Image (cartoon, rainbow, N blue to C red):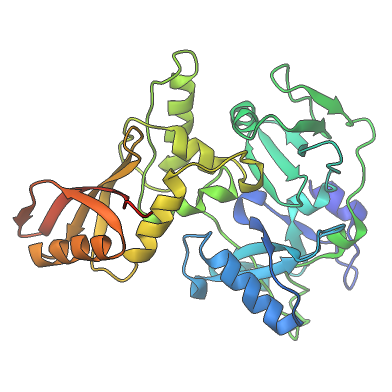
Length: 348
């Protein structure tokens, strides 16, 4: 999409903007109360913090333009300090490449605008967020997102994706989007720089995977089970290489789908989030995690320095209102571990 950036983006000191790959930029819609600029940045940071799996000191959270936004809605971009240093050395301004795709209107429901080039597709969603994915994964992500309407701005999407073809005259980006920049030229040192390196390719929603849980392998639907398993393996390979998949791949594929397009939220993610918050300061790690769908429980293999720590974790969870069933704990030179089945309490 470099040519599109050069055509539509304003030049700074004669230098055209350069698009930052969508895989490197996480995007979120957050809603915060009316506030001044300083308060708003703090509120946006707080709203995004629990939706990413990186410490705040390692990232930049930048507000991007969002045309026709609902009151209180803001587009937040998550950017890593690692890439920030690289962009700081560049001579040109930079912007996330999905801002070069105009935000599709959603008068009749969810819409994706898709720019496909070869084996890669960049998507701009109706809420203003964006992501990139392998073109081969796009039909599965589209199904998981509830089959939003599609507009094809680049190469044909294929028979599996019924799209309105706008490739003959793709609409230009919104001027405010095209004018956005993470960084100005290097000699303009008074201005800040920001960019982000994200490990998961599929969608921003995959960021929570770094909390320690791994993908799930299911054989639920005979015709699509193998395809879903391969997709999950490919997606997790760069996050936790070599880790085995267990029985249920549904949760990871749901997390690969952009957050705003998920039709409904089950009990898995709220329970995982609540347990993670409870154990945030505990001296433990997760070696394996799976989902007990029948009982709505997290099945977690917990590691800690010693048996007393495991007992403390169980007490903390029960005090927080969870039900915990623990298996037989084992201890060795490397510490102790036990399998716990964690569910909501009677009042949860």
